[in-house]
Each structure stands twice: as structure tokens, then as C-alpha cells.
Image 1: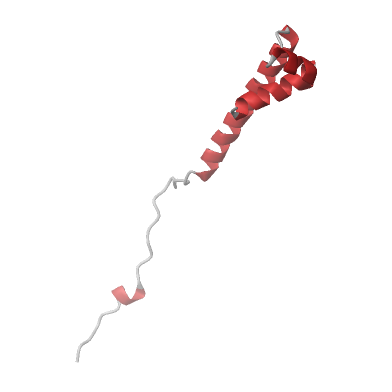
Image 2: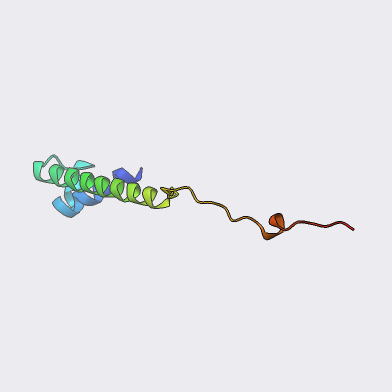
Amino acid sequence: MNKARHLSLALAAYNAGPNRVTHYRGVPPYDETRNYVSRIVRDYNRKKAADDKLTKKQIAPVKSATPQKKAALVADSVPVQLG
């Protein structure tokens, strides 16, 4: 059984009772229970997607608006005299 199925059955058992889930071998055919399970799963998926989007945005590298100049090495600007 996959995680989504376990979650749906757990939510249905919470709403309608574990005996009803066992009796119907799944989510009972009650509108209230089916709507409850659907609403909770939908809300969870929306919040998860928003969280994933936020996490992805925070991980992305931040681009600078203005290019930065690299500092020149002091050794490159000093004339070298050979012997």
C-alpha cells in the first residue's frame, strides 16, 4: 500500500471511525467522510507545494543587479626589474 492510500485510510478512520473503514475495506461511502479526506489531502498538497516553491527560491543563487569588479593583484601592477 502506498503512502497516499495509508493517509486516506487514516483520515477516514479518524472521521468515520476505524470500524467503518474496516467494514467498507477503504474510505466509507459517506459524503462527509469523503469530503473531509479530499479537503485535508488537497490542503496538505497545496501547503507542501508552496513550501517546496519557497525552499527552491531560497536555494537559488542571488544574481547581483550590478556587475562587480574584481580586485587587481598588487603583483600585477608592480614593474619587475631583471638584473
